[in-house]
Structures are given as structure tokens and as C-alpha cells.
Length: 415
Image (tube, rainbow, N blue to C red; front, side, top):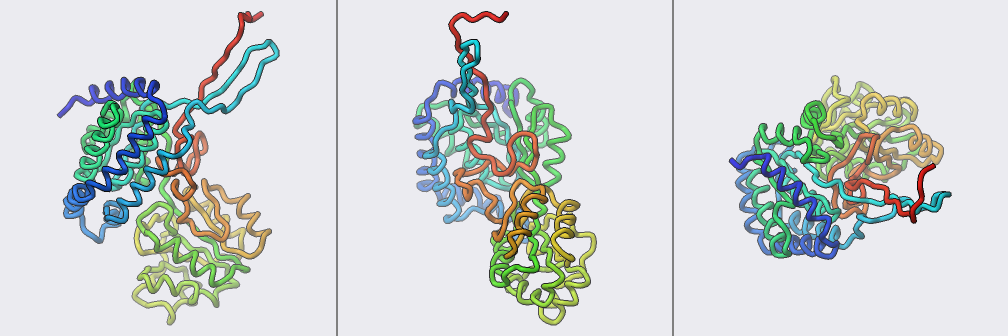
């Protein structure tokens, strides 16, 4: 096995070389990769099929692992979108002249080397590479064993795209899918500028607790929607179904539905689309009574201690609350700071929810499924940051740059 420190060293050297590469050339490499994904689709699907053959379809990660022609087409489109976005590097964050005549600018610059640790999500390989290259960063990727064949097929295309555009393949490295590689990346002081975990709570906690390099924490999603007293029923049916069932394995999927006690009579109609999708509801006693006889008995379970659960499956918690303040209190106790939504026709309730709910993305009359870098116009995302220091929410190009001050004078001396 190749010495990991050699990989880290070459990544650091590549990050310095990237400073001299203009945006047009970086974008060309990303566009080349999009074309390679389309022309080599069969190779990617074959590698992905090998990964899928080692995982049970019932595993919640199976959907995240799976690549399809449609998903690959979407990845290629996202890459072209990233390539076409304005590059943030060199952008003025601040520009002013000091009283002594010194010209002061604060500008965006790349971090340098970004390490990303992720699980069974081969699309992340392409997303991270495109965003890092576009923003002038080298990337070190550490995928999980479950997606190793898919990731190796992806990095082969990435390296080909770099070579075709005269760029070093060291600008994107894929580490072995071993625990030893994870430990080495987390301890790569002097080589890696920041490490970003993408995955479940266990992975994120491990990275935060063991890293010696700086970490941007992307949080697991324990996501809520609150159906308020004034909410439109038909709107609510669509929002709840989309938030829960569009893709159950993703971090923005709905985990707990909170319903105003005054709307108990509408609960069977509100949940009917979920029954059609086979969603198992873990309901409190009031919700259970309201749904019994209208929701399939086989899909109705008494709620236990499930309110902190990120389901990543066709399962959902359901709790009845007395009003918006009780809903906000529940979210404060059990939410992960990811995405929260209120369905309401009351602008006062909407404003209170926006002000009082502490999350990176807060929605009014929308499903939480919109928490996604591509949906926000970022082209793709490195992850969804739930921390408050540094970037928060979907992280695109600007969020993976830092800043430096540039000062220009004509001989001023400090008194």
C-alpha cells in the first residue's frame, strides 16, 4: 500500500500548484469530467453493481449507494453547473482605505487541502472534487468500504479529466477504505487544512472526537415538520409526503411530524399519502387513536423513545402538540439543527417559527427536501453544516474558501 504521508505531501504540493491555475482551466477539467461520466456510464454502473451486490437492499444505505443512468445524468448536469458558476477566489469581501492611506482588502482564497470522509455515497466523490477544484482546493477523499468499487471507478475518471487538461492527478486523491486511512487523515497536521465528515451520527462524532486537524461538522438530520392549526390540508399532504418519501435515506428526509391538537380530525387525510408509500408511523397515544381504523394496522406502531431517531427508512415519528410553542420546544429538545418546517396560513406563527427554531435551514410551507446545494443554486454541496462557527447549511464554493487581508501602501510607517 502506498505510504499515506506521501499522498498527503503530494496533495499539499498540488494545492500550491493550483494557485497558479486559472478558473477557465479548472472549469474545463470539471466539464471534461461531466462528459466522461456520460461516455463511461457503463463502467461506473458496473463498478456500482459490484458494491450493491455486497449490500442487502433492505439496508437504509442501499439507496444512497445506488447509481442509475438518471442519477449519473444528474451528477453530470451538476458538474456543468459548478463549472459555470462564478469562482469566488479573489472576490473582495471587504475593501476600504484606512485613515493613514493604506489600501486594505479582504479577499477569498482557497483553504488549500480539504479532506472529506464519507460513507456509501459515490456521488460525493464527484461533488467534492468539482467544488474543491473550482474553488482552487486540492481534495483528499476517504470513502467507505461499501462504495469502494464505485469510488475507484469515479477517481479514475477524475484523474483522466485532470490529465486531459494538463493538471496534476494529485489535485484529487482517494485513500484506501480502511480505518487506518481515516486515522491518518484525521492526524495529517501540516498537510490537511480542514476535514469534513459526511455521514451518520456515529461517523460525525468519531471525526469530531478524534481529529487533530480542523473539522467542519456536517450534522445528521433529525428533521421535523409542524402542521399548524391554520395549515392547508392539501398543501400539508403534499409537503409531508415529499419530505418523508422523496428519498428516505437522505439527511433532509422528515423524521418526526408534529400536529396541532386542533387538527386531529384531519390526521387520517394528512397521512394517507404516507400509507400509500408504506411508511410505518410511530405515533403517540393521541395520534394512534386518531389514525386507528384509517391507517393500516401493520404500519401503525406505538411510539417509544423514538424522538431522537434519524430513521433513513420508511418510518416516521408522529406526535400531537398543543400549539406552536410546544412544537418549538420539542424541536429544541430533539432537533439536530439541520432542517425544520412549519405548515401554516398564519403569518404570525410563521414568523415566530422562523425566529425561535434553531436550525441551519428553516422552511415555511415547504418540504425539508429542498435542503440541498443544487436546489440552493450552489451546483453541488460538500455537505450540510449544522455548526454555528464557520459555514452553516449547504456548503458550496464560497463556504470552502477562507479569507486573507491584502494591504498596499506607499511607505507608511506605524507610529
